[in-house]
Image (cartoon, rainbow, N blue to C red; front, top):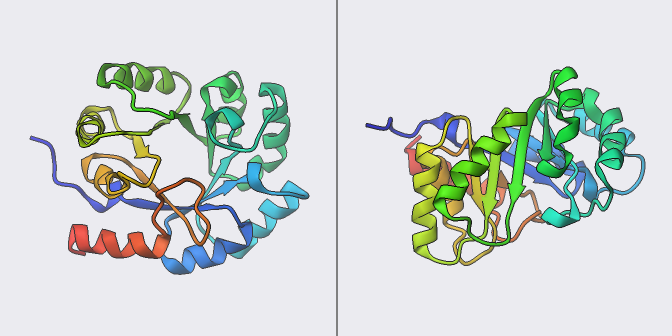
Length: 220
């Protein structure tokens, strides 16, 4: 029998489109912040350094590619060139499969690797398990985000989240079935990505909304 959900399966991530919102995210109750550096303009090292000085939360460094919904258009060499000066300020680094050849460098820097995959459609259940294994080859925490179309898709995603190895991050994109964002942590997803004003993906709850949901769902 699977254990009852606990607080550890509802870590709230404030995905920051605006890096000046770091202190706000901490005050609102986020557990970690994600710096979406592909969305920032200017001197990235200065920006990230200011964020680190503004709050004490652990930092996820993410340079999201255009192929997976971001604004980074470079290749793997450009990716590591951009990320390397920022590593000293990060606790976690998000690495897509196309940049996985640089995972050993990130691991050498003693950062936890979130191995991510974002799909614009639902992925069949058996392929979810294949993808999980592929992501664990180079990452510490697989992150699989899909775009479900039906309630049956959500049931499959919850089943996968429950049965997959831990830790695991699962999530959805889109507004129609956004309720799954609140349910997936109850079935084992480690992180919930939220916003502090401007979402990084359609359907995200705000940090403040999810703090309330967490209290309601867990009775704490």
